Length: 59
Image (cartoon, rainbow, N blue to C red; front, side, top):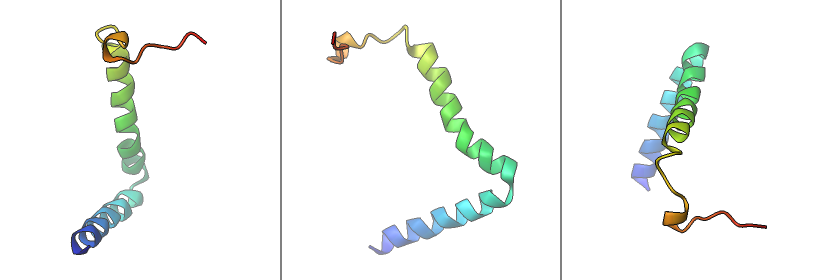
């Protein structure tokens, strides 16, 4: 339980420091979304969902 509290305190400190700089805070939130968008679109043609058992339902 002590480790979880320490992780939370470090995370909260990072959030507080980031929130002081609005542009940095927005970029820290937007960067993972940008990577997901770019990698998701770029890798869409390389991955077949049916081969992973995730075929789309037909209604």
